Length: 249
Image 1 (cartoon, rainbow, N blue to C red):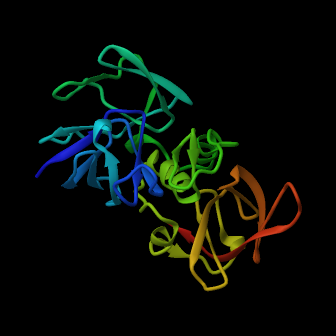
Image 2: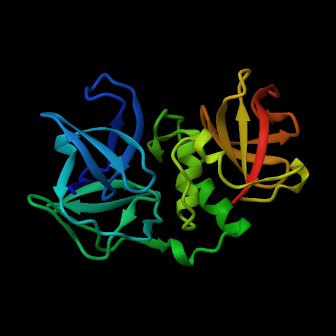
């Protein structure tokens, strides 16, 4: 079985193997994926973290027969690693490896980077709020998973990752997990709230800060009020999302 790892800060994962195709997710520096197919310019991959399938540009990947795992992640907003001794800025929550990652023509060095160990991070309100708040005002980007741009499910996934809690990539997939709460009033910091459209399809997710506030990616990562009917924009006072269910993981 062949694998690849991203050798750029953010490698777009596209629906089809061309640059004009929709970006559906991203592979961060040092994240691994299984190779499903390979063309001249693009490689079809299956992300090892969440099983997401798509196409990445070949020149942004390094092929390898081995996978190195880590539970360490960048804790700075933007940290500097070195690829072949040249600097590269990476986003908060990018994987970090204590030894350099060495591929055929690339060496990624992570020296002197502040990190957190996800397996030791307590899933407590103050920690959840602290790490989620790092993303505040990050612009919404369909398929995004970084401080450069992020979508609603990518935001939930990235924050949960810092606590060694693995979520699928898309909101509707995330909604299939967890235990549903009976009432919004039962919600606590860290619960996930899901929202649907007129057809009943889950289209949005956010992280509860308490039983009346939610942090989520909608236009930008923001904090809004939530009630039993849904989200009320702090900017306009208008209702923006219809609540379907709140779940605990």
